[in-house]
Amino acid sequence: MSASNQSNRADSFGTCENDPIYESSVQSIRSLSPTIKQFHLKVNDPSQTFRFQPGMFLDFYFPSSITSIITGFSICNSPLDYAKTGLIELAIRETDYPPTQYMFNHCQVNEQVSIKPGGDFHYDSSITDRDSILLICAGIGANPIVSILRHIRDLYQTKNSEQVPYRIEFLYTAPTQQDLVFRQSIDLSCQQMIKDKILRTNYFVTRDINDDIKINNRRINATDLQQAIQWLKKPVTTYLCGPSSFIDWTEKTLKELDVKRIFYEKWW
Image 1 (cartoon, one colour):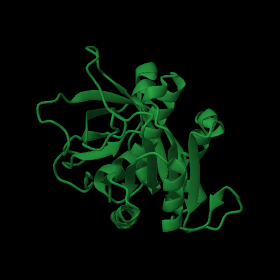
Image 2 (cartoon, rainbow, N blue to C red; image 1 turned 90 degrees about the vertical axis):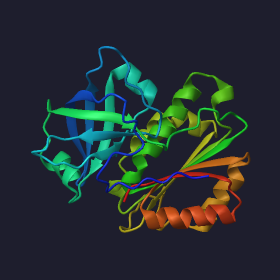
Image 3 (cartoon, rainbow, N blue to C red; image 1 turned 60 degrees about the vertical axis):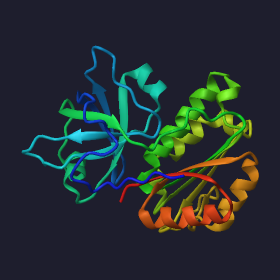
């Protein structure tokens, strides 16, 4: 079972035509790496109808003077974090794609942006402690996967044990150590889950050689997936996001390992 979405699209996808478009304002912009910036948006939502599920994206509607392309940027934070802070968190990587290029190079604090939440790729709320979760992401594909992991962390912190998966494995790969922009925040915010052996994190860099013994200097391979599945024990649901070739290989390998539930988002 899988769900696939492509990013370079002329029309919105996964959003309902009748759903409202919300106005939002850019509250902060911060560089996470030379090629990735973090954005926080405040949604103008006096009726409090804005909702999203972990793993979903925002369709952006730009003025025609900027671009006529409607594009989606995945949300990084959890619904609970949004409820507490009133802010949506995004991480956007610099590319030559017009909407992304505008956001990375020209967008300013206090700028108004029209948005709509949507997407078929999101966490399954029926998952319980009888299930285990395998989270796999590559590069900026980490965005929706991190949203899902943060949601699971929120469930864990509420002490509602029946809603928390039995175990979670998080595999995160990027070209360089700098590109692992969520590593520090995940290890810090999920520290108790790691200590309690409910969560394992595993990091990979594929381009640079680094001296951090906690980071693998190679690609994710079939052995990594097999060992993750063995550790997870309970029936595994996989959420996967990254480049098409990465998703195709990972899905094929997981199916060979008899993983039945694989959900993925192809972003480029």
